[in-house]
Image (cartoon, rainbow, N blue to C red; front, side):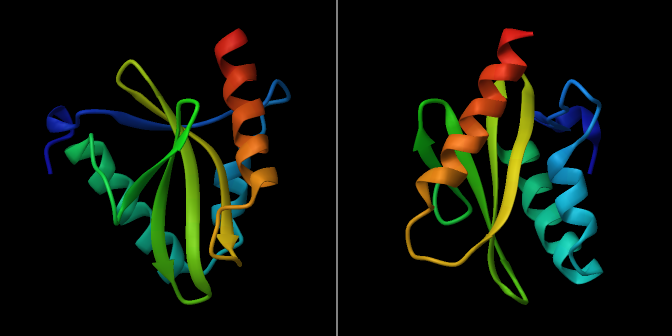
Length: 116
């Protein structure tokens, strides 16, 4: 796929200390799970805006990529700023509803990134 055809470009959120929490989380997963999540993020980059079942709005400017992996359902919460898809938080979902504390963490990261 031609990178110039991307509608948005994925970037990892970076803390002030230079850490990239989503990249670090992905490294803990199996190669197959990383590939599945990466393919889903790539699809979002090329086809944005998207809806269910791949992408869902969490409100307040947050979105989630919903990936099926060996351990269940992975979520990568992101925001879009201009043509940038900022990957804020990743986790494996254990309950039907996305937990409020996961959304709150992503929202805090989004605010920190925007406020810089």
